Image 1 (cartoon, rainbow, N blue to C red):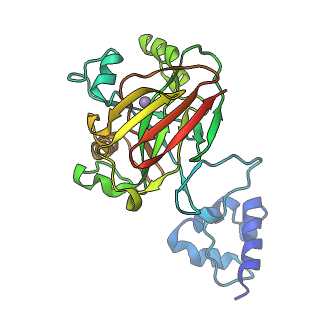
Image 2 (image 1 turned 90 degrees about the vertical axis):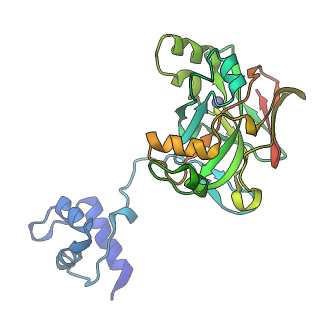
Length: 291
Ligand code: MN
């Protein structure tokens, strides 16, 4: 075999559109390479090699510029967790549902998403600067347990749900509260209130093997050392297994998805200069300064 140099030259020609031997178009070649049974025809097109196994998935098209991918460090390893989607659960603690003006006995929790690049990493032992966002004078915190998935599926059974969890982190769901409310009142989308840049500060992910699953434990948010939010995870209306199972009825969950599991009562505003400290029994604190 004359190996990878010839193969990659051919790949280059295919990707750059220069390969049009024997009347085959670039599209024909790419199509044939994309089907398992088509190696023969691909090989017959190649003058210089008998073993062609070019997989378009491994030869992405060139892009005119690069964009960042989002990852979260995995505690105790040199690896990082690649984030696919951020799901958030709303009104998952009864007392918080009541303070938001709904009746938890009548309205079940619900879901929304943030863009993946809303993640802001908060390494343990550091206080990270977090810019106060534009267009608000009512910037609110919500401290939340976050579950990170290593696999997914549709209609996941409750009994199987936790087997999809890779690990857990402690995160903040930050929002322009007045815009969230106003848009809700006007029956408009929440994005401008909930999905803003850096609205998902988060600590490292801790693997289930290290921490076990989180079904109970104290969760707190302090502002400048004063306790603001203070509850126990066992007060969640839907536990993590139920969240995964319910979410998978609406969306196909996949590896890399993370789920903010909702916040307890006593959410409130921060201003520039405030330091927020998040605490969850079993994980290191996170610390964020609004600047
Ligand atoms: Mn939230």
